[in-house]
Length: 332
Ligand SMILES: [Zn+2]
Ligand SMILES: [Zn+2]
Image (cartoon, rainbow, N blue to C red; front, top):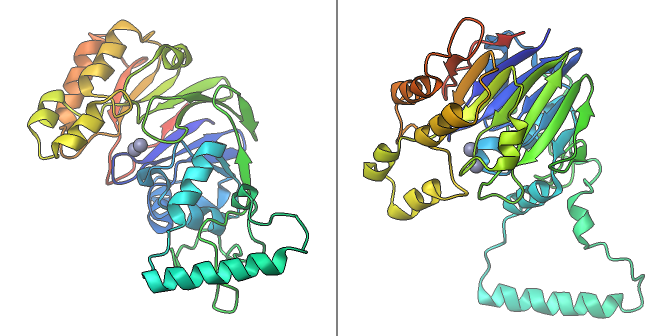
């Protein structure tokens, strides 16, 4: 059976589970591990059966639980190289230091360089270090479904200081190059968003096609081309234009949300549904709704109008993904 379960959607965290054949993939990890597992159980999914995590982009509402969850489960993380690097940078805080400390550090580094003049030219400090997890800094807990140490202590004290970016395995993919995870085919596509290398996905299993398209400033032709012949479309309907304009955000944030690399408005989603969408999906799920600049009913009515009577029991059933509770699993 093919199943799609939205565990959370919105600026406070995003994640879903795609199941097909014998494979289960967590799409984004934007809640704490503990909360993701709690919601999975609520939705009837067993966290211990997850085979992989796949990431759309490095914004915290999509990755905040990534490291802990991947370590707990011991599963590979599928991610683009650009997103992985940005995530590593984000988790590697620059040290704050006084001028005296900085001078001392410069002296020590100069001394170290002098000492290394005769050493091997192999550069242990290369960027590859980002993709090479340091061995032995984390271990998979005996019970993968137990997140009781959420964010705390994989190191158990006796290990060297742990690397917050350590993952059990990293698999790079590139937008535009389809690949397979177990029984699920994955087609990643580029989306216009202010992140390092953001992507959306079409997942296909047992002939069922499901798309994830959130966090995009607009819908360019390459995305429209991907969103064809779907059985399920998870589409961003982030904000109502008027509510955003009159709402509480500072002007700079409003500009960012409205920009070509920001978020899709109710109106832009509706325009797509009315003019470009092929009307074939059994389910259209509106997602990533803003809690400050949108109302679920506004998003729903705007999309319903755009679908213009096409909704039926067989096609275009409209659902709204929620921030605070999982959506009922959608089964095919
Ligand atoms: Zn987001
Ligand atoms: Zn984002």
